[in-house]
Amino acid sequence: MIPDFYVLVFLFCHFSKVANLIIKFAFEKLNSETDFSPYTRIDFHDENMSTSKYLDYVTMFSDSGWKLVYGSRHGGAQYFQQKNAQSPRDIFSDLESKNLPRKRFINFALTYVILLFTDFFVFIQAGYFNWNNLFNLRSWYLTPGLWNMKGNVFWRAFLFETPFALLRSVFFLFFLIMGIYYILKAIVNGNDVRESTINDK
Image (cartoon, rainbow, N blue to C red; front, side, top):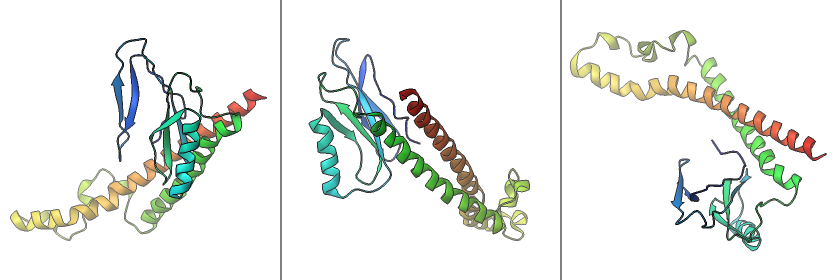
């Protein structure tokens, strides 16, 4: 879902923005190889900030030579980019602050793991899904006699139930896949925090 908290450096273009709603990056081509190609760093917050607190947060980075490229006071990834070549190459001053975004993301990921797997087991217990029927699309529809209907009657019944069939089956798989995804992301970020701590000793 969120890129790793590594530096983003490009030789012939520089990162300019992130599209809203979806993870889509935009880049601007440099005029020449000697043009300044700024570093981009990512911070992460797992909670909302008030407007004034978020302004202070952005101003703190701005005073240190970093401008906000994309972010929200409602949390998530915050993209900062060097203002000029004289700006420091890292937004974090020590190992503890450098690992903090990863720790926040781990908490964020584990919260979603709990929610997603809770939904997963609710679907199981409610009988909305059966592994044996996963690839039997007809079993997703519960309207009696649906497949014996003809013409407009069939299409009306089919189209009416399709959203409910998707809720019972496709969304079920979405909960499972996203739960596994967040578990893996939490493990990877946790390992990176431990390794960086060990290497610093």
